[in-house]
Image (cartoon, rainbow, N blue to C red; front, side):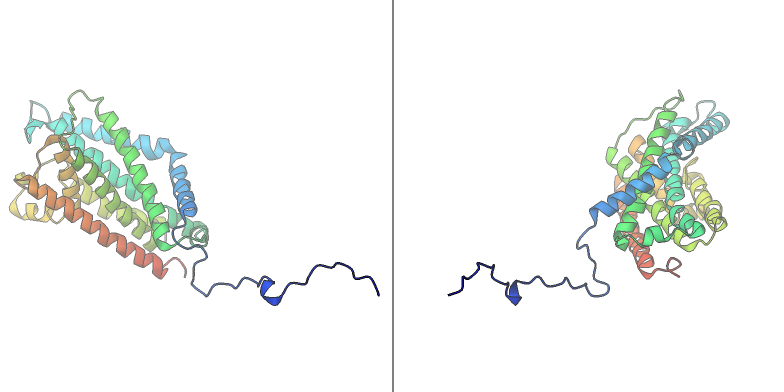
Length: 292
């Protein structure tokens, strides 16, 4: 009888690994939140503006400090008091949050537009990031720059001897500062999607953002305006951001006669940002001016 060799048993068909099927079209390969990709894009955007921090952080602080010096010397002499404080202390909070908002817009309105102009927009659209993750990373970087600019501005303001900044309501400083930065970051991202060249971006900055910033009650209280212009000011969202932020430092505001009016403004800004964020998400998802 021939010797039988001990050979391993052959696998059954059920034991043979089946080739991995590709997911259906449109089904993401990374379920849930792509935390690594989101963090990577966020850090990339932060490092982009931080590499030129002299231009993106410190230059706005010096420019805004010059605003403070000029307006204080021109309008704040002879002990002028506004809302119970000297003019320099009244102006300082508005200048801080105005600088935060303008820089949030500048940061968010650059990246996608630069990608379209340089032909590198695919670097934002090809990675496995959802529209929400892309929006969070871009807006988060813009708000980060706004916060850094705000801290630099606050430090610069303290160098002026007439400014005395003490937070009476810290929640208002944090909330209105973040909501104002978030509002301009969303607007900047929409501008970056819409614009086809840097002239379009500059037009929005010069003819929309700058006028709304300067006519928002930064250097005056709206009670001193004529009734028509007072009513127009109340349709300016920048007015509520600046007055609410100032309320956090001074404990007084020209939004209304009670603290409840400030709370209503805080809630209104939050709802506005939710609506604006949803609009940005829908535009990103449609691929308008990005994938064509």
